[in-house]
Length: 319
Image (tube, rainbow, N blue to C red; front, side, top):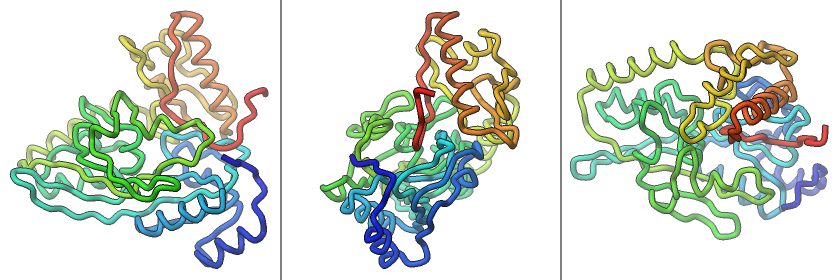
């Protein structure tokens, strides 16, 4: 994939002719990421329905412009140097429900907020997403990363996902075809590779009717646990996946790194797998914390942790 940072004037004009004033240039991404860090997007669009989202990625693919889909801004660390090409803010959030036997299928566009969807389902007496209360991000990001908490995840709920594939068009993936694993899917495996990625348009989730009071009590328990164990403030979410037979936060804490600080960022004293921006951190500060945690845990415990977050944009790994 061509990741040149210089987009031809004709391409800018084409995007402007197609999307009008919705197209913005050099938009700081720090205002759209949960860690509140990140440089500018070369081109920036906000799309409010799945059809428009598909239209934008199809045009970018045709013009060979690199694109990145931005949802809730969690689980990513955007470089201080920004993101070349096109960043699409996904705000497609239409939701519908239909009954299938004893269950209800929720069809939801990929830009819908996951936690808000969970609350809506609870209010309708539909069980299956209570674990997602308080989990940041969008449905699309959750489907790609197999987001989960409290013993459940997207793999337990997803029936099918409608996916746009570069050069091929739209295809429906069933649960098995998503190849789900721990915080992983067939689409997540594209991250970190210089390719045009597939894009989630909609997801179908299978839910089960249940008492609103029971669902609410369950969700409140999950919320209380989250508040007790995870820090507030600006973070990207869980930084590392839990290695087999370990908890990443325990390893980082045992390595003596709770409270460790670089610039305006530090490793949380409340949960060591969360790295907090104290208002003035840079993305490079956070990446330095990542490197320190990874290297120290490897040296002390001979365990190589794997990032759960994705590094997005232009990074100088020689620095």
